[in-house]
Length: 177
Image (tube, rainbow, N blue to C red; front, side):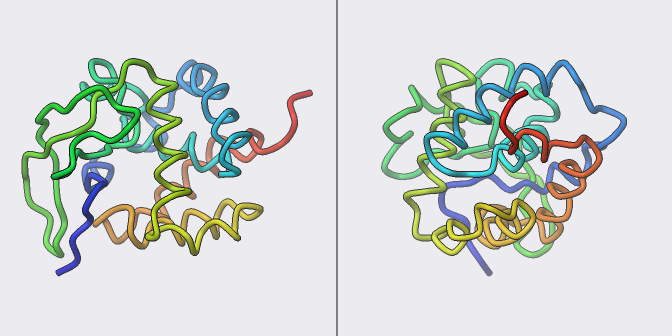
């Protein structure tokens, strides 16, 4: 059994439609935060945008709307980390390897931007994701490497890549015209 210490299972994403619930307004709203993560942490903005869409149900999940948690980051024994402002319990789905309902303690943020910044900080400072960092120029390879430790859902990387492709999120990695 593999335990993911800080990140929520993305198995819930298996139940979220990728195309039907796509929201161009959501993408417009998070583009600046995704680009800021790319600028500060050298993480593909396309990956940050797609992961946030998947993890937050296009910003419609309670965790995103109430707690500004767009990435499903959990609290751990040490607390909520240096950017979040607290923790709150939410239902989730864990796959270890079979998927089952669970309750997790998730980070609460003051703003959407704080959630994105914590995402950048965590991806670039955790030993779990150090193998992804040299792949930042290739968003598909980057998320494939991150997904190995980020989520318990074995199809997580494919879901993120599908979102990036279907919604042209790769454009976020290019300079703004």
